Image 1 (cartoon, rainbow, N blue to C red):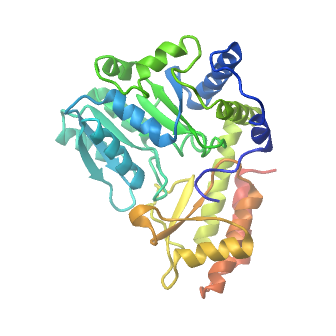
Image 2: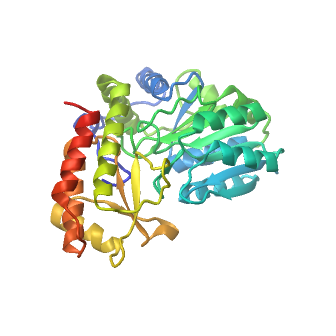
Image 3: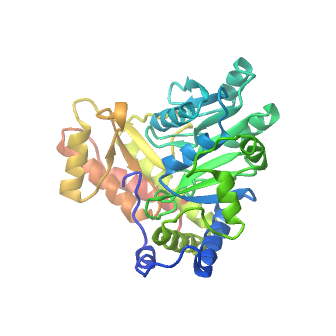
Length: 378
């Protein structure tokens, strides 16, 4: 129950167990086309879509490296660690980064964006994580933010690594100029591939840039994609895995895939609230993809996590970087199920009981089951 890498389907595991092929072959071109066409449906986009052999962080760096002109003012709305990493990437490529910390558990919202753009009318780019995995905070206003950015002539870049597949991310409708995601989260694929979308507005800026990165040069990728290839050797095994994982999602039905995540999130939060846990996210900004909780007084995240793993075989996560030792996190990602969520709520309750808290695991489980069944009958 960690926020990635996620568990993967047996079919995805088997898809990787084959001999290598030439990445300049017709067989690979067919594979690339299949992956991109399935991705377009997930991302709801007619924009260009590129699959990079890298982690999701590599996708964020690709966006920064291709978009940023020296001195460009880049506004980063921060609700956690991954926004900080995005800021670092844009700064590394010459951006004049203005970081705006969001307080009281807020995610990126239209009011904050308007205020920032009023203060910085010369801004070129607005960026933020769609879903901040480190603090369990999501933005539910990306469509409105995209509209504001488009009206102001500012490019919008979103790190949607953990959002895509868990919530609707309609790239074109939301006016996202560069959307970055990865394979190892809600798309239930092994780690190692990043996906980047590029709008026509983003291309106008990229094409003006004379010095682009040699590996992440998206102009080069666009040229090779004319024949469904990549400029450099791709992770062929992962492409097979990704193609199979996307096939599974579409066989289930993408709307149903999202609805199952929605049901899982509601059930998970219902169970967690039964234990009176305090979330990092403010009301309305709770991530349906990963819940991040303050550690109850007198306990440690290590004690909670170790007991969960040793006694119940369930792995959850702690905090990252400066959040280490201050929280524990439980994910609702990929191949989620009623059974996994219910078992996790039960194990957490028994763990908290064993560590001295007065909680009722049986009641929490009952509440969790009812909520899941309400949104996902049968």
